[in-house]
Image (cartoon, rainbow, N blue to C red; front, top):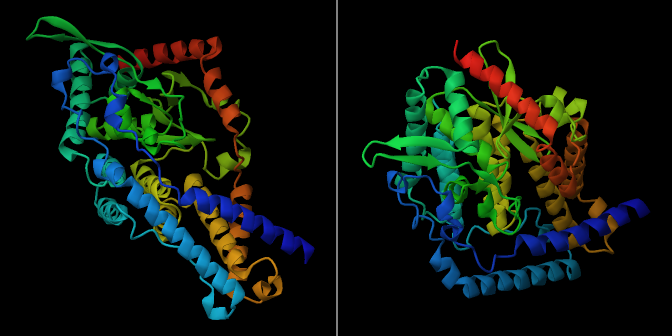
Length: 442
């Protein structure tokens, strides 16, 4: 009994903290147009669609921010009043088992539209990753993102890669050749000759953005559109852009996960696999990834890490990305769990979806516990719906532990990421590149 009381007290404290965070509305959404660095843009700039205005980030949201904050504060007052009433005047019908909905908040309707659009893309004979990424990011910007300019930029990058392959007398039908060119485009400086101006033009490598790389302060840090504008990204946006470009130029590539991280896997003609680490532009071995110390054998066996994820699994992750964007703007409610369940339907061992579902169930359990209050544990124990909710939450955490997940602290992740710049990794990268270039010539 004492143990249950302690657990419930902890859940109530967790709920108070997480509900406060979930209901927080960012005071200022940083316009992505401010990320633009003229020195890192693709040259020639006029060869690409003008991106300067497509992400002029919701002036209406900024202008109405005070009104939104007042709405959230009023919602919290009403919620607290309802909970206090439930606690003081208990009857079994007064308990709400679902988290409060943000469906009527400004901009939330765009997420429900986006969810329908993802369903439509997913039901197509061939999943279009470019469209899926656009839908996810456009929902955050409340339908202000230009599809023509976004898709135009993707097409232009694909064209540049094809032009470079032809300039180097490469084979446009060879998967390895196309993958190496995509990797070079994202991680190296490429030189082109413009016949009109009779000048040499260059593209510059994309760099890792260590500032708020998890998007805790600014969720747009996770976006492909932010990466395209600033040429700075992280382990979510860089591999995702690569997968979009790989589909655009028609080459085989796979997404793969490691703790708190994602990268790209490709294979040569002899079916040997190579890990393209886009965050620092090197090819690394599985051994280098295992050196982080947080990849358990169970995780590999259960295919949550180091697996090869095709476009169908990347599409399933887009549902999680959509839920994450919604959560960052509004909080956890029925929309989040709807997205997560859809993701798990197509990708049952998606560790990011499983973690988010566990978080959702924790919040939901704490929400129910708070309605009973600290002095009514015996009544809570008689509530079969509440008890089953706690059991589902516990089962979810147990399952996540059993499949091999182990949390990786941010400082450990950053240290591992920086270790990829060590000389032995660079030496291995040069050896792998030399081997792949020889195979490319076959």
